[in-house]
Length: 253
Image (cartoon, rainbow, N blue to C red; front, side):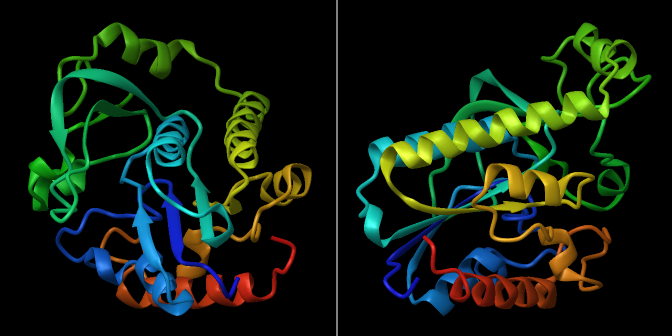
């Protein structure tokens, strides 16, 4: 791990949270802090409310369009909730939280029945959630956008019996898809969990290449922002330190 020249990261808000309110600025989040420890450049392709399918898409774009050395690149992929997905959009989205990067894409990030934005609506700029739709139970319309029909919401909120076995199988499918992509391009990589799950230990052992079964959320401990969910500035420092020590103790890749 001493010859890393580029750190590439993918995932959701556990890897890159919107730089808004009390959330740390981009350079204060753990990917940038870890890159400094590795004395490398960093490309953080994660995005709040991102899905594992989005991570696959952005990783494929990176592997097929960017100049990089497989021997000197480390990819850290953080997996998120399996029920999130994305769909093409008719309008272009600008990720305002990363002004130094164009980061434009014609995709909507959709999060069925999970992310409760009620408190954020009260205290934060709703423009932060442009391009992000949260579908919540018993609501006739998505919170921020009417492009997704109420029929889709009813499927997720009322008809779909999303059992533990279904969720576990879907996560394994997503992990092995990204694993196959990375191994096809011969890039050094490690996997991470964003949130603590029921099967972290089992999945880490089954799929291999997980840096740890401890989640990024757990690494931050009590050092969280006002949402009590994402790492604050100190939590990101603590996470970067933990990941660096884990990487230094892994010599297999």
